[in-house]
Image (cartoon, rainbow, N blue to C red; front, side, top):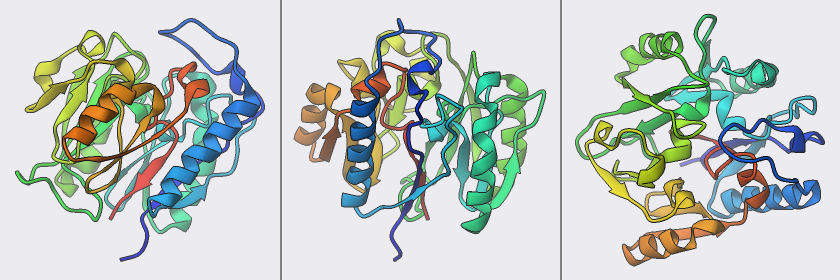
Length: 267
C-alpha cells in the first residue's frame, strides 16, 4: 500500500497577525513557530506519511492552518469558502494541488461559507475502511465561520458518496474541531466546558483538559496530540494507544490545534 499523504503549508511572515476570536491575543515567536511546524511535519513523516507542501500564501497570516481550505471525502476534494473574508485567498493554491493529485474538485460558493475546521468526519479510517457500524457521518459546526447554506452544499455534494451530514451548533469555540475530534473507533472526545452539544454524538468521551480534545489519527492505533495535553495523552496510552506529542504552543495562541496544521489524504 502506498504511503498516506498529508497536505501542509509553511507559516508565513505575517503569522502573528492571524485572527483570534475566543482568546486574548498573545505575542508570537515566528522562529519558534517555524521550528514547531517543522517538528509537526516530522511527526507525520516518522509515522509513514508523505508530506506535500501547498505553495505558501505569505499575505494570509492564517494560511498555515491548511485544514480550513479543503475537506476530502474519498476522491472528492471540497474547496471551502472561508467565513472570514481575510482567509478566502488561502484556497486558490489548494485547487491546483488537489487536481495534480488526481482528486475530483468541487467548491462551496456564496452565499455558503465553510471552514474545514468545522468538519469532523467519523467512520473513515486510514485505508478507506469504515468503523464497525458501517456509518460515515460528517458533523459540521454551524457557527461563526460556517453557515447553513454552506452545510447544505456539502450535504448535496457528498450524498452520493454515502456520507451523512449533521449540523452541530458551535458557539463556545472557533470551530467544531476546536471542541471535539474522534478516536479511531468513532468515539468523539471533548472537554465539556467548550462542547456545545455532547448529545450530538452517539458515543462521547469527556477529557479533562482542553488540548486533550484534539487528536490526529496517524494510524489504526496511533494518535498525534499537542504536548500541552500530556495528561490526556497518558490516559490514552493507558488505554493501549500509541501517542506521539509535539509542541505547537505558538499555534495554540492563534486558536490552532494539531488537526489544523495538515489535511490527511486517506485511502
